[in-house]
Length: 93
Image (cartoon, rainbow, N blue to C red; front, top):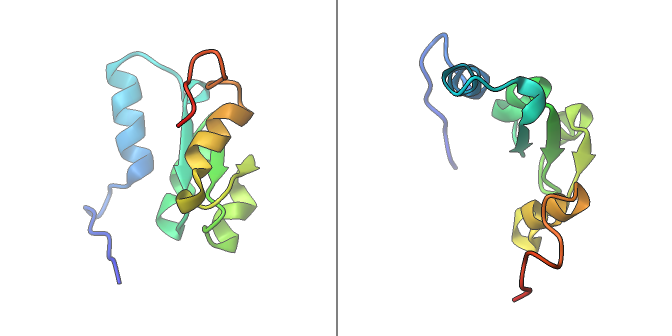
């Protein structure tokens, strides 16, 4: 069983905000993917939030979109869904 260790006042959402500030980007410009409770704050602040199919109900409840499981190419499918990937750019395996 995996465990996350983070600083007391830290989290994925805080890390994302720091990176966005450094690169002068907005929260509305990012897409975040998550599957566990430790991803909820990150998903809540992202411009587009995607829950993995294998994610828990709490994650799915806050997501804009629910994709397939990670083992079923869920990230790739979400990127196609949002038009970030399309057939002319990506050669299928």
